[in-house]
Length: 91
Image (cartoon, rainbow, N blue to C red; front, side, top):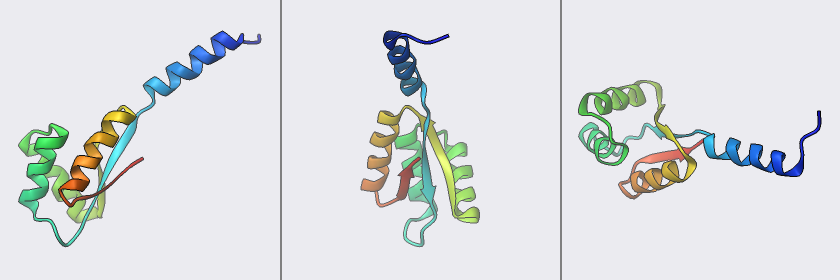
């Protein structure tokens, strides 16, 4: 069964709208645990315990996905983290 152009366009739009992106935080030798935790709480809306756990995982494994969501939101949050000197990327 073939899709009409309208159905195909709608399917693509729905896929894009629901696609999830993630912020990956990388370990560095510059930022303190306290600064990373504070940044995750303030920018990624983490609870303090969640931010502490993320910071520890990043320290131990070198990187960790700290937030997932819509592309625009993840880009905005990653820019704020970059402004604070953290090393992140959106994937």
